[in-house]
Structures are given as structure tokens and as C-alpha cells.
Length: 275
Image (cartoon, rainbow, N blue to C red; front, side):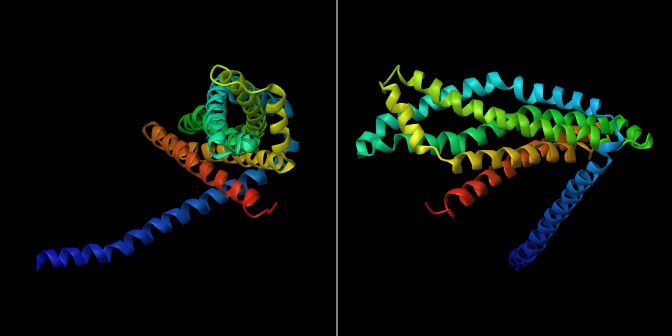
């Protein structure tokens, strides 16, 4: 009898647990939306401050997010490009569809791997660094000091990082695609031989303006999401013990929504737009 009551209690508590989780999720979305709205409201104050300070932050953040990440991008792009090319040229002839080799490369590398892998690298390097830096500034009262001085901290903390991240991600995606195609081609020569003119002819035929538009849109979306989420969670800690907690949340949740948005954009571009 007691077991039956316990089972009934657990079943009855399930809707309550689900409802509480949904409410927490909705509260988080609402708070994040209010934070994003406040960021765009801060643009009105740009004319009242010296742009030199913002330019300096943008340059510094672009160097760290973009230029310093190039070695990781180059190595990963070469390895992934080589694997995709070798696997494609080895297996496609078995099915008699080797003529679609260029389409395979564009779909896997340019459409999916390039934007997604680049975003994951930026999140793991720059996203975590932004969240940690902002959380440290929040804990040390630097953000409060800016507010007391009449300076909108979002102008110096969030907006420059948005501009730098968008520029960096778009540039890194282009580098990733170029290195993946060229580097992967030369790596694949160790296993199989592909005529260079045929390789680029297939790529040129398969690549379209839709692929470029999708790349630009993904770079904009990821470039907005990563600094916004990182700074949002970075401004939450109230003690130094909470800093690693919110940094971990910033990274894990940004990763989740980046993958989700990447899938959503791909579906919107390549499944709803009929050829």
C-alpha cells in the first residue's frame, strides 16, 4: 500500500516538476530578452562618448578572438577537410555518384562544418574568456563603478565584443573553408589522386549564392549570440564563488543554442527553399 502511495505521489509530482522547469526556462528567456533590449538601447548613448576607447577594445578583442584563433582553425580545418575528401572519393564511386563529389564537400564543409566548428572554437576560447572577465569585473565592482560615474558599462563591455565577434567569426569561417578545401586536398593526395582542375571545377559548380548567404547569416547570429550570452551570465555572479558556476552556464548554454540555431538556419535555407 505504501509503495502504491509513493508511486502515486511521484506521478502526481511530475507535472509540477515539468511546470517548474518550464517557468524557469521562460523566466530565463524573458530576462535574457530584457538584457538584449537594454544592449540595443545603449546604442543611443554612443554619440556621447569617445569612440577611441571602444575602437581599442574592438581591436583587442578581434585580435584574441580572430587572429589568435587562426592556428586552431588551420589545423582543425586541414584535418577535417582531408578526412572528408578521402572518405568522399573512396566511397562515392562505390555507389556510382562520384560526380556529386563537389556537392558533398560544399554541404559538409562550407554549409555545416565551417560555421559550426568555428563557432565552437570561439565559444571555448573567447566565450569563456568574456564570461570570466565580465564576472570578475562584476565581482570586483568595476561595473558598478562605471555606473556610478554615469557611464553605461554595456558600451564598453558588450557592444565592442559584439562587433569584434561578428567580424572574427565571419573571417574565421572563410579561412576555415579555404584551408579545409586546399589543405584537405593536399592531405588527400597522400592516399588518393584527384586532378586539381577537376577538384575546383566540381567545387565551383556546387557552390551557390545561397551558401554564401547562409554563411553570412550564421556568422551574424553566432557573432551576436556568443558575446551576448557570455556577458549576460558574466554579469550575474555576486561573489567570487559564483564565477565558475555562471561561466560554466555561459559556455554550456551557448554551445547548446549555437548548435540549435545552426540546425534551424540550415533547415530554413536548404529544406524550405526548393531548388
